[in-house]
Amino acid sequence: MRRPALDDPLWLGPYRVLAELARGDTSRTLLGSGPDNRLVTLQLFADHNGFRAEEAVLPGVIAADPPWLATEFVPGPSLQDVLDTLGALPGPAAPRLAAGVAADLARLHHAGLAHGNLTPSAIRLTTAGARLIARAAGREPADDLLALGSILAASTTDPPEAIRRCLAANPTAAELLAALGPSTAPWPPAIEQLLAAYTAELGQFLDDHQLPSGDPVIYQIADPPPPPKRSTAPRRRLLLGALALVIAGLAAWIAWPPEPPAALPPAPQPPLVESGFLTGRGHPQAVKFSPDSKLLAAAGTDTTIDILDVATRKPVGERIGPIPGSGLTGMAFHGTTLVTSRLNGDSQLTVQSWDAPTGRETGEPLVIDHIDRDGAWPTLSADGTMLTVPMPSPRRLELWRIADHTRVGRIETPGLFRYAEFSPDGRTLALYQWDGRSSRPSQLELRDATSLKPIGKPITWVDRDRLTSFAFTPDGRTLITTSGGENHTAPTVRQWDTATQEEIRLSFALAPPPGDAPADHLRFTVAAPGLDDQHLLAFTAGTLTVHALDGKQDGPGLPGISSFTISPDRKTVATTSDATVDHTVHLWHAP
Image (cartoon, rainbow, N blue to C red; front, side, top):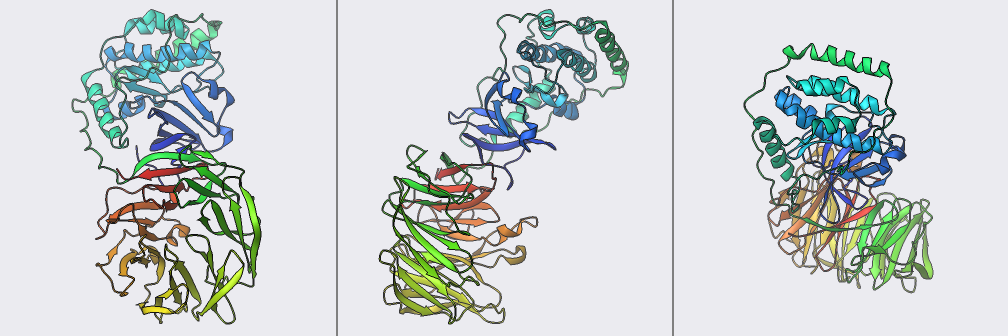
């Protein structure tokens, strides 16, 4: 059991992924939580070919949307895990094991389905008994009973004579259940202690969730279903032969160990708590809040944009796009108008305005030709009224007023790499540039956004410490910079007074990216203001973390993140996932 990794979805439909329970060649088993805080087991298949239509209507299946399905969560280890940890079960445990599995098989067979993959890994042991993980991969119900007989013989040191006689008669699952009757005997103490340890481990992944007070019952049978057609004598002989071979080796099985595994310590309090999610119509890769924090624009990998209502959690108006060109370069809200900038080919920039409530374009687009794409990037102001555009020959940064398509100024920028960012109020422009030579320093300077005159002295970085990002605090008084991080080294975060251009706190290092982090993750390292004046958010190698101003990390990070944004009211963080199967935007708040 582990927390989601970079390639795991954080959500599948309405279900939040809490942990990975198991992983195979063709599927993964995940622990999830629904909108009602109900725990579910999520089966995520590698592709649609691993998903059978019959499985969507299995007993115990809550929801299905290929390539995944959700079933009721069974809080307990698999029989295989128990056998690997404790060895073979004592004989008195066999009736309870058989009764639980037979009850689930009876319901499955009554629906005209067969499990087809009955192994110790498909059986869960809970405090309420044994439960079967639902599948419908088989054709013959009798095969399930043959597999159950083999499992009982191989997993218990001395199966009761009544079970052996019953299975030898080639019963149906309903007949076996009726013959066994209700099994109220408790599990042996070692199994009960193992279940307690499993519950303690599970608690680390649940945050504010509560474990169910009693184990959920996957299948309940008021009256045994009518028996299906019986198999013929060859099936009975095959079952008897298999049982004889397995029972012959009982004396060689492992003795029952006395000591249970120790319970794990509780998990630390998370620094961000899930407050909900917004479902788009595609996989989101970038998000932006409106000024009143009521709307959220979600740009998808298919070059469309959904406008989502944060309160109702539903799309608003028509979907924007698909937007032609080679990709979005920025989004900003001006009231309820969404302003987007996008590239067309290698050297043309187009800026468009959209009415967010309806999704309709307003006004004529601003088109700028022959922009510089070599180490430079255009930038929108926070209110979507101004635009910086890098231009070549000579290298310069032009400022444009979007409303009337007017160029209002230019700054000579000889550096090959250059990037600008507006302060939240739009009055200050931070401009970073570097000529691309490791022997020369890079610098960041502040300028008045109206007169374009420098403010104070430039901030200089020497050696190979290059900036990867910078951001203003909401009041514009502090500039947060992130530098370094190349070749899996630790990025450095610094905080500067925008009035004096002096550091106001000691710098601190973020955790270096792991050695197996993808190359595209290494390029995006960001430190930004947090949800209050005492914290920062840091994003590196696909993980979002919360830090105090002195750099101390607050609790564990959120893995599997591809982008994030903070609402203007500083109450919510919105994140998108690396997993393309995840079509949701996840909302977080401070605990």
